[in-house]
Length: 335
Image (cartoon, rainbow, N blue to C red):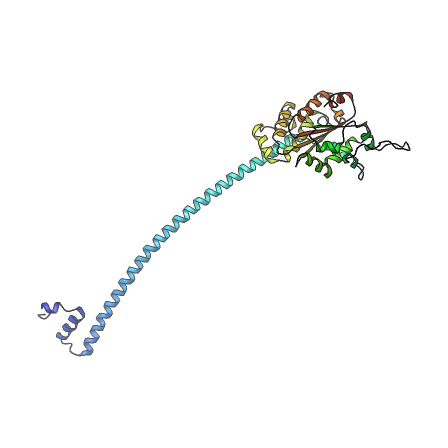
């Protein structure tokens, strides 16, 4: 004890003090001293190892907890963003679906059951018998040397007091009249022209990407087949069906309560046609067959006013076909 209290003993390091203390207690054998020291070192090492392990575990636990918290935070943010995107996507899809339905409803309000019946019942021209109307030279003799009956197309051609149709398609002239007696093939000729690639190519020489619209009036048919309202619905439906941007613009300025043709008035349809045709991105060529078959209630004067309204719109030209009656020739020959 006296040894341990000495100042110079206290200045020694721990292992050496322990060795001296053991020696002083009687552990004089080297084996006992080394064994005792080994146990002390092992105990110390074990304690230090456990302390280090506990420190590492504590640090790892803290780090894992931090990482877990960060991951959960990122996941929640990601889920919130995904939820917002899904909500926005569903909302946009809902809006798009409603817009498509509005388009369909608007177009359906212009379409009536017999709208294309007359055109579909017209017998197509046989072979290339109607090609003559698109020829450049229209001055050939229409008579037959042997006195035989002229073909339907030739009868129309012989009675037509107008300039060459080929030239008209390429020109800025806004009106053309195909006239002929009943059964002379006027409707067959018009049906041929509106689907002819040659005619389309000639129109494109007037103005590229010209859109062809057509309507066939038919007096024996339903009311909508022989009146101005049916004509306007038909032309407007064709124009809007070909261009969704124009249709969307029409939806913005038109009421959404239109469900059928009965919801439209003639004045509304005239205004809609004027607005649509005026803003249409491509030129328009309108073919109206059977002008003489307009119903008596509307009459030729009202029909010619509609035609004149179309012609007054820039980049719109009109071709009409009908019998050579004075009520039309007086208005058309001077135009």
